[in-house]
Amino acid sequence: MKIAHVADSHWGFGYPGPTPAARFEDITRSMDWVADRIIEEECELVLFAGDAFKDARVFIDRATAEIQAFVAWLRKLSAAGIEVVVISGTPSHDAISAYHLIREMQIPSVQVFTEPDSTAFGDITICCLPGMNRSSFATEPEFAGLPPHEFHRLMTERISDDCECFAGHCGEGPRILMSHLTFDLADTGFEDALLQNEPILTDEAASMFDLVCLGHIHRPQKAGSNVFYSGAPERHNFGDERTTPGFYIHEFSEDDGFYSKFIETPARRFKTIDWCDMDIAAWLDGQVDEFASIKEAIVRVRYSCSEELQKRFDRRSLERALYDAGAFFVAEIRAEVERTERIRDAEVTEDLGPLTALAAWAANQGYDSAEISELQAMTTELMEESL
Image (cartoon, rainbow, N blue to C red; front, top):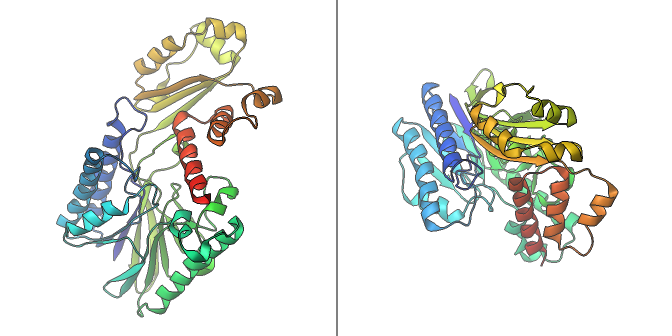
């Protein structure tokens, strides 16, 4: 039996690109490629492990287009006779109401879960633990007034209890846990301090299952002995620049258990060009190469140079050259700020509000505008939860 494991499509509008819909079309193209490959591989079951959408709170016209895209993908698999199990993802990305709407469409062979539950496929039990965050627990009396470390501990214990309950009700066949969480042995790609705000799936809880199929982290990987992140089928920002996009196919046999292989998708590339004084001087002298590596890529240029070279440097001419070389979109051309203590003190002080200070710090660290906006959104959510 072949089982496809997909997650984190993040359909949405407004990604940086030549048009507001350009990246939405990229995601749809990659997801169509995934569906075609799943059908070609003759998979019998698809597990979609959450975060179908980019943003939970959107206007109705945008929500309609995003839901239609996901539904079309599900119908394509359904029409091929493939069973699909879907869970909702992180609440800030996936509106539960969207998943309820999809469930009410009663697409043949498609099951949608927004609460912990289980289902069966032959003798395989699939335990579904949808995505959650701090806000999912904050309204419960048991969590009221807890300091952060206790809140984190209790969230993690609650997830472990859910897993133990699932495992206790599974049949004799293989057990699969499908969830949208951070696994404690995973390569997350972000600072460990952020894990204090994340519900965690422990290795002990994961060991109760034969296979764990997760969404949430965009770096495809096998973590621990039986835990897999499918990654995202499409790159979404420069944080994904060096990430290989795709999905997993897990094949089960009675003799050998699960064998897993990763399928890479033809996603849009991101390319960062870092220049120093010598590169700027070479550009001004007409000695820079033809940017062969940027064709059809989303490009950003980060540079540092002397004040004298800065006066001679024309960003618009560089932007034209990048587009002439075939860049899909030039996201930014930005001078790097020398990060001295004086500059940091001038820009980030106690007089600034938390979101303004965060934006100033992130700009000094080289984050692009989309990444800064995401950090500010996360901070806003945490601040609201602490009130």
